[in-house]
Image (cartoon, one colour):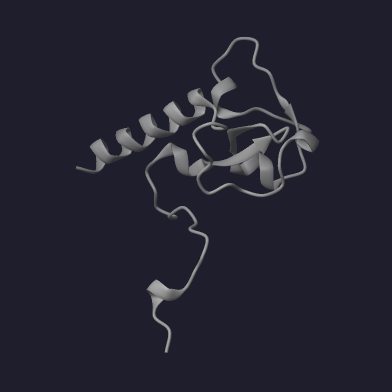
Length: 102
């Protein structure tokens, strides 16, 4: 008999999550650096260029081509390859959601 703790599964974000970070997922860009990309844009075929979270508020934001973005979602990328701005935005969104839930 197997129990839930013995099963290996990829965690999905909760449906009722208040954190804005649940709308993004880690993907490798050019196999070198991991960025957070919007789930809605990754699931559709349009637009051909996707903007990572770290570029959203920049006046001259750089978009990434879909062919340069990894196909598989990363659960928790190593700190060495993680974009520091994307990581900070995710931590700030999660902290903001926790404060709002209290």
